[in-house]
Length: 338
Image 1 (cartoon, rainbow, N blue to C red):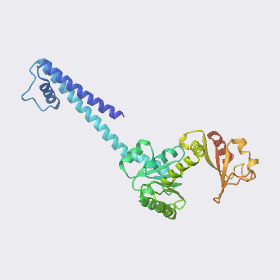
Image 2 (image 1 turned 90 degrees about the vertical axis):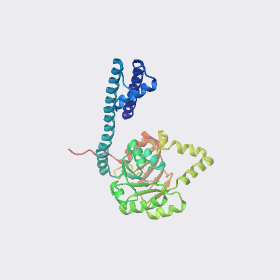
Image 3 (image 1 turned 45 degrees about the vertical axis):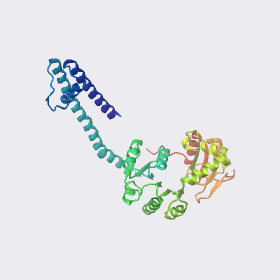
Image 4 (image 1 turned 180 degrees about the horizontal axis):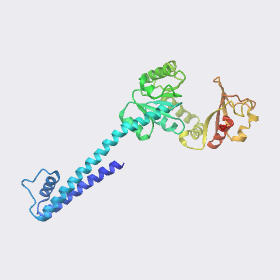
């Protein structure tokens, strides 16, 4: 923004010098507007006078002012251009190195392969809660990622060395949302071979690709078209349900949210049933479902359900209430011994 202002200032100064020259030569040298403009350009560019020269003292003073103004403007332009070039060079060297160090320090992060419409929305939605690195090969899109302030690796996500550079061996998960289904399949295969414990989500445009992605190692496969069609159909058939789901969506930025909370071994809730745990009374959150470590999902658990370590509670409530539930699920905080 500052550079654009300086360029605009330089252009305004150039116009001012030209106006000064044309007005001065027209008035003192009695030149026509075209001849005055011609004489101004000759003076500015310092190519030397030929057929037209200033004869009067005031005209020569105008020529001196225009010449000095042109020289000053020339050096000003050199300074602006040099600043732009040097800033870009320094950023490419020091900025990229600093970003590479940040990526090297990441752990339990996510890799977002592709910064198209879907990838961009994913990044903005998870930016506050989950560390991630974007992998993109398009230089124009890279500039957009830089403007958004996200960590990135420039390169092809289908290449193993690019995934390694993004820290896939230390990552918690990977999201592949490239436009081509074949690229997503290849990324899933490569990612699974590099990190067997990785949680992988992938995009599939064609229904027959869903099975291939799961066979390649994807934990979750989503079709944007199918999800959109189901959501629109739900809005037609169950409009009130759709309104409720939209209220709990993160992008609505409202207090009411759905959250998953994992019970730690140290939590006081472990070994208690839902009634004696007094979760609703203490935190105010509502438990909609419980996902056990075996993967079994229990919807609307009974009051006699006994909570176990590792259970994931699917809870509904305001942010403050969900935070209290997370504190209960985490257990007592231990202070380091001195």
